[in-house]
Image (tube, one colour):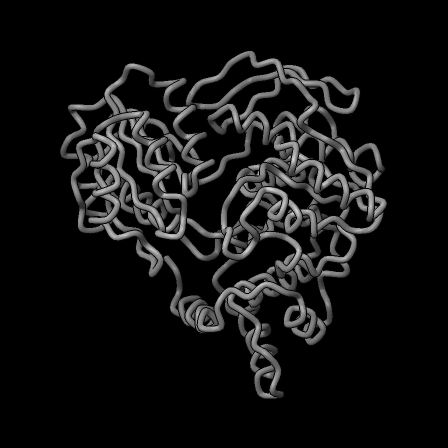
Length: 447
């Protein structure tokens, strides 16, 4: 339960949403200077990418935790609770700590406004709070996920990360990052710093060429994680086991708990980052600690199996690449099964391409709207789905969508809730409530 003080703090933070999403570091530099530049004393692993960056962050973070060090994790967006965004030693920032950090940072931002300066954005406020909190907690390492792009993202105020990591790159946020893969890759490559190593998990050759050029310009050693060829021992909806060689070190029988072949790629990318830090003397870690960290890593709302009875999967497949990965994973694990999809997306995404992917899994749909001003209207999404030759029922809201889906559960082998992360948060909360009330059997996930 979120406290009243925490709600007040979150409301104050959200007050900065009126300043929009504006890339660039000028406001962030001034804000952090007022706060004493706490980020300069932190050892940071900086992670960018279109998809996969959150999972790579989680793998690295859990491995760091297994070493016994004090580790911080900063990610976005949150799924159910604002406090998810800032984590330290396996625990989310407390309501009291959130309130304290928000007051300090928002007071500094208000001073900037009073002095006639441009106001920091909401994301800049939260990022500053994370830096301040991690400094106060005495973090040994901070795993830092980029919010949007890289070059102008507020996290890019970090001057000298231990390493930078760039995961997969595809078309997303084209209105801000560019309309081509090279343009978007250029924005992501903006996190590469002078002489700091960069690990690349992007498979697109155009993207890699842009990243390689930037790394050369910055005299930054580049490690291509896509040259590794993991041998898959086991793969199912509960995770995978694989063997892979990373920088001449063989990792045999690595087990991960996140589903999908793409998660093997993400895990290999994380292994490269850990191995680079180990080789460069920045991290002491044993193979046993790496194994435990890999196995412990999970990511809410990303191909997350909620229940066996009925079989329910939720996934924040919010863009075309995410939809493609979801389709491949579902068809690999549930081919020939009866599947119901419940979806809702934002209007500024590649909705038609994503819907086409979804239609390759099933012809039965329920559509609804995420609770977001950018949401695609239910009626418009239903029209797109029906034009693909699918049956589609409209739901008033996420709770109604859950009710309609569960009313049909006896007719299907799998129910998939997918789309915007704003939708997935509401869906997950409702499923958790129903699990608590024993409407759904709690066979898989401990809420």
